[in-house]
Image (spheres, rainbow, N blue to C red):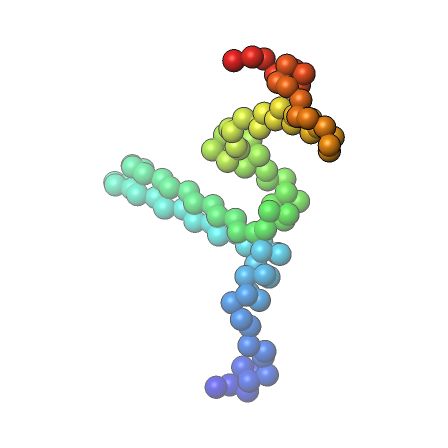
Length: 103
């Protein structure tokens, strides 16, 4: 082991992941398939790994507009108001007095 490697602190996976998400990392690559100077296939790969906060700082918010990531569930309906509770010591109210329609 070299002398410089002994002085460096050991970085855990969590430390590395925290730093990558905080700063961000970009991986880019191109693959081209040619046959006799005729390009048959081109694949461009761009990968950005960062936190959501960092992505929004960079102007990326595609997940907010993409229907695959936006919940399509309807908003929950309002629940009906609970029936009033009769005061203690009185006879229970009838259904008609509570405004409940007869069956």
